Image 1 (cartoon, one colour):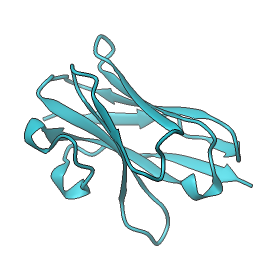
Image 2 (tube, one colour; image 1 turned 90 degrees about the vertical axis):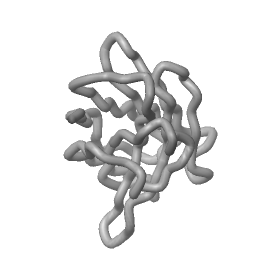
Image 3 (cartoon, one colour; image 1 turned 60 degrees about the vertical axis):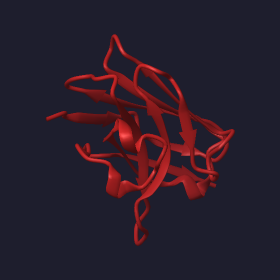
Image 4 (tube, helix red, strand yellow; image 1 turned 45 degrees about the vertical axis):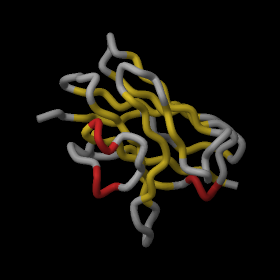
Length: 124
């Protein structure tokens, strides 16, 4: 069982930047880590994912060109760099893992080992 802990959420002005961290208790190359977000009253939305050990990443259209997902295997941590933040990026952000077979998808039903989340608030 993998335990994930998110951190780095904060309140920022529109146009600002943040870097979220997802720290894992264990690390394996044969899976992906995804970042998701959920705003009040809305469903959980996949934001970005990365193949652990391979570095290949994938993004939702809503964040392409603004968000960057990276990994540091030595630190067992996956990062989500967020630039040019918009008020519509306001949400609780979560990370989770998926088996290698599902890598490339951002369907939340394909992911497990969810963290507790970290809040991002972007004001206009």
